[in-house]
Image (cartoon, rainbow, N blue to C red):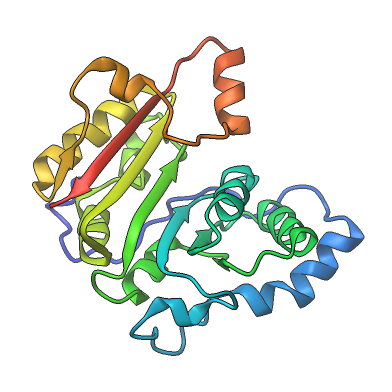
Length: 233
């Protein structure tokens, strides 16, 4: 099954399980009280300027799809206080961990969504985001599940619509087949220019990269990672 065979496809189940072990008391409280404050309301139209979504004054908008434990998102939000971050993560335990950290650190430049990222992408205004990060996404290694990989022609169309001209799509993975998959899909899409000029460009982590638990796990298991940067043309 290819994207070309289903050009009007709206969403796929890009993620697996939604919840793990029971939340700690404070995490459960955060999900009940803080999540409703931080969660994007997709039932109302997106503001013409996304800076209106944030409590702090921001100048740029960046999106991270599938933020996992939130280490990278928190690091970037602290590093770039003038950037508003939209983090999407359907896994309940990961969301609970992130919003607890947001509260502890008093961050005002993060908004979140706890379901399918394609819903957010379809809600966002055209040319409204400066960068999209897709870091260590589920590779769905079995061929019959490849259609569930987030990188697809349909989703690249979504990225292309919401990214500003010259905006970046950044992808990291330790799974060679998914790295090759992403390179091929971006090449075939035609709206993204891979920025690497030599091997060190895609073997070197992104500037300011804090590392993630998924990357650490890959290294422990003997796998190297690739860091791909594509510019929206």
